[in-house]
Length: 185
View 1 (cartoon, rainbow, N blue to C red):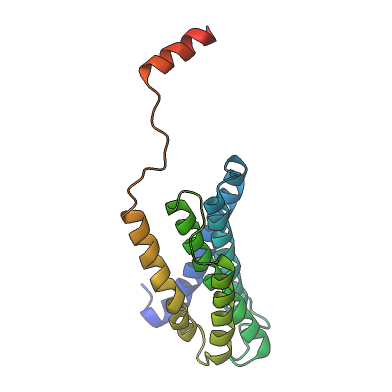
View 2 (tube, one colour; view 1 turned 45 degrees about the vertical axis):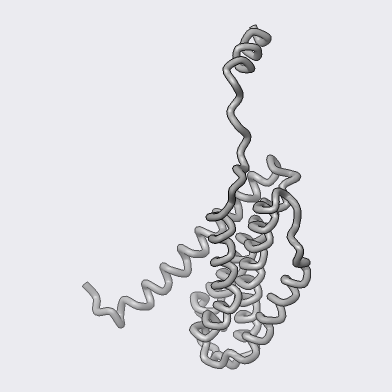
């Protein structure tokens, strides 16, 4: 077994690649299922969230796993700052779209009282500020990300946990099943 310092880059590599693969698969699944839920605004918001996460993690892959020119560049380099902005914007927009999808789902298809464009603008502003002022790389970016991530995930969890109304159709009664079988024969 390798000592931890030698194994750490491998673990970091696998973690980023697995996160990218998972986010891309979920975005693809939501994109394929989107045509079956055309009038469900929450579904489109969740698709956008997973696509945003995929783009954010792709920026990390470019930054840390592409050998040239990004992985050898300093954190203060302009191209690295652009990649950090793409990462932070993708994550922030993803969390905001998860929040929007949850609000619409819990409200039964209606958007909540907070305008979504204001939330999206706030997420982009946070991404720009954090990409400009985070001087110590990805670790500091994740701390800035917590400003949006923690309240969003807490709200989504509480909203789904306290959801009283069931969102699935009740099963048909036996009488309607018998009628449909009789009509089909």
